[in-house]
Image (cartoon, rainbow, N blue to C red; front, side):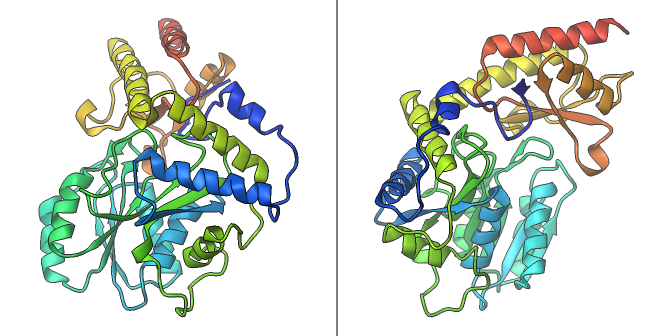
Length: 359
């Protein structure tokens, strides 16, 4: 089965086989060494110096990392602004609401690009904003938000940028220094081609709260994790098998050319699919220059419900993804993540072509 949903991804044999390594207690030195290796390699993906940056590993989904980032790094004296233009921006606002962070929202309809004039006007009238949360790749529609322009606005105002990079880390450009990023949250099982269950936050060490500050959460407090992981430990039980798989996936990423090569591969596959579907009359909902290389969304072909389209593709070995909310009956989404190749996607297009020719 070829997974074209935005995570979990189709695994390579070497990552899948890594799950079969010996059982390991998370309190043993071998696990400490494995954990340290992963933390170092995560920083190396975007060449971040360890003296200023750290990575913190959490057993949980990408949402766990996002929740840890927001609740740990926005102080009680701070004020957060959440940018929304899809489901995952709205999810960050919900996290802020549940944890009673002091926050505001600048909302955009799903799929629309960030209105920087609107944002500038809001910030000029709300001078107490200290942090801004934004989704890099909003998989609701496949939109890649413009962090470079966002950084210019935020850096001028000394606003710290917190990025949901769950579905972009490892395959899209993330210029941590130039874009003024304070932290980003991501996961093992998307562009890194690992297994679901481990997430992480990359952050500036200077952004961590002092040890005497009482955290908002127990399990998701980044300060606690960072201090114990720096010492070779972990505050709670991690998943050794999933760590084995992530370590192998990171080795595979490095050996195959890093995030730049992965982006090039995704681009090739995404362009193949886009051009092939458009030739059949199936239109993307966003122009290519506004879309990520990780996932594109398309209008459902005529005469098909999503359920019928999905089930017929599944019977031929492909899993696509539905739209969300009010897009659930009008679009489908195709991701190019995972251990898939050009031949897989060429066959995918052939399957769709045969489906359409029956009508």
